[in-house]
Amino acid sequence: MVSGIINQNPTVYVKKNRLSRPRPPDLIDEYAVEPIDKLEIFDHIRDIMDPEHPYSLEQLNVVTEDSIEVDDKRSHVRLTFTPTVEHCAMARHIGLCLRIKLLRSLPSHYNVDIRIAPGTHVNEAAVNKRVNDKERIAASLENSHVMYMVDECLAPSYA
Image (cartoon, rainbow, N blue to C red; front, side):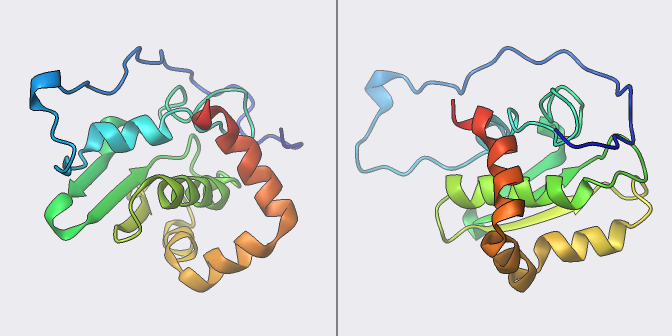
């Protein structure tokens, strides 16, 4: 995907074989709004591909179900991700992919906060600021090269 790979041999974890929980037919109400939970968020992001490796973020343990916090009443999601190495050059790109996927998947009134797990990256504060800054995100969305990379990473998550 990207030349000059920093982490040549990442640890690859077994991908969980799970689908979203179906609701029993007798409980379905066409007007009811089901609350969003962390399993639903995880199902949206689990298949995003790493920009450097042919593995998903779930397989590299960059995102886990436990790294997601959802406050449905306040329409807030906090996602903490863990880069594979502390000097990962793709951390900002991964954060942008996560944000764009959630922007495309969640209702527009949701506030999404994306963070790097504390102590797991040398530029933690800078990456956190970049992936949560609306102006920088908008600029990224206008850059065709960046969006091509993002779309490549997100493509399997829409299958």
